[in-house]
Image (cartoon, rainbow, N blue to C red):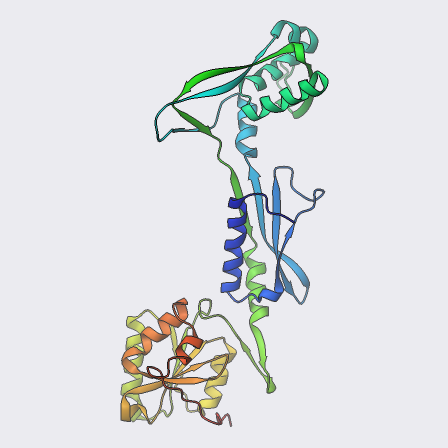
Amino acid sequence: GVIQNQPHAYFIARPQQFLLAIGIRRSGLRFRQHLLNEKAHYANDCWDAEILTSYGWVECVGLADRGCYDLTKHSEATGQRLAAFRDFPDGPKIVDVKTVKPNKGLMGKHFGKKGKYLFAFLDTISEDQINKIEAQFAASGQAEIAVTYKTESEKKDPSFVPQEVTETFVVKADMLTIASAKVKKMGEAILPRVIEPSFGIGRIIYAALEHAYLKRADDDKKKYFAFTPLLAPVKCSVLPLLSTAQFQAPTQRVVKLLNQANVSHKLDDVGKSIGRRYARTDEIGVPFGITIDHTTFEDDTVTVRDRDSTLQVRCPIAKVADLISNLSTGKITWAEVRANPEEFPPFDPVIEADD
């Protein structure tokens, strides 16, 4: 399909950015344009963001271009112009304006009491609508004008319930006079268009969970949630290599820095091997792990581990909170960190013990 206008395209692109940012795989995301027989009556155009899950393709976001439908219908029903007015920035302009003048005697005789609904419509008619009527007059000498109105009780019955109906009036060319005139205009009337995004938040959350649930390539039993750093509720774990008194001071220093930077974290100092602690924080989707090890006491650095690649770098304690914060907000990526060995030297143990 083809997106009909730039504002609608913008509001399709932004949900795409959002869905990719929370971890929806690009290969499992598509946008589908509604067919004519499924498009809502109020929509000029409508697209759905669909996400591939174990249930198949599931609609998660609806993106409807309502055009000017709502204000137009209110205007037709009330007989009031509901456009906003904006002054021309360069001052008044002399412009050609088309007007339509009904022959009320002839139209009243032809349409009877229903003519008043047609007159009310013509009082608020737009220039685009006048152009369409003029084109029909030129082609066939008559025009079909669809008018929506509410029915009225002829006997003023209090139990009568008005119904909204749309009726097409066939108007002949001699019933209307269409004229052009030069007028001085101070500004222009603007009828705002409406783009209506509708998000199924429950479906999106489910899809994000399913897309994030992975297993290690080398071990099917090692499963984990690969939440993006932006989405993950806990940004990093703090893991002292040993739960001895010696490790408490640098551990608390790291925790304090993370608190000051408003970085959510999980301290895991239970006496299990570091490999097992990595695995259990991976399982709940924590994207980064900070390990305080023996080298910390030599050069005041810690290791920072990436959950997805399991690769590590060394980072000064003074910089670690800013590093995790920047990774979590997308200011930098893990690939960029690994590409800067002078500031963040690689630290890749040959084997991570997990026994």
